[in-house]
Image (cartoon, rainbow, N blue to C red; front, side):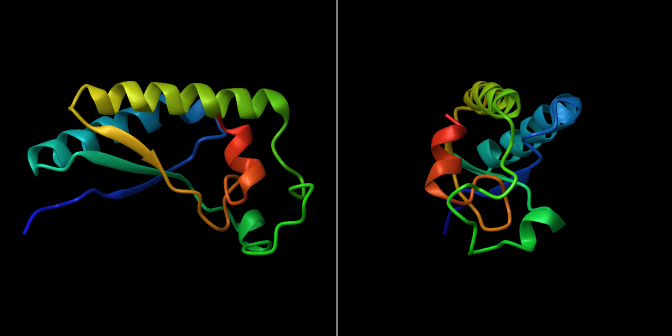
Length: 111
C-alpha cells in the first residue's frame, strides 16, 4: 500500500497569511514526498460565512472575493505550485463546499 496524496486546505484569500501558508505547504510537501506521493491536493479553507451557503451558492457567488483578492488567490496558488515542485510534487486543486472556490465561477476566478 502507498500514499496517493493528502487533502490540504489553506487560507488562500488573506495576503497576510501567505508566509504561514507557504511554510505549512512546504512541511506537508516534504512529508508527502518522503512517503512517495506524487500530487499535493490543495483546497481553500472553509469559513463560517461560506458554511452558511455550502452547496447552494447563488450565481453571483454571494459576497464573492473582490478582483484584487482573486489576484492574490491566483498568485498564492502559483507559489504553492512552485513549493510543491521543490519536492517533486504536482499540484491538484479540489473545489470544496463552504469555500470561495466551491463553484465553477470560483474555480475560474482562482486561475
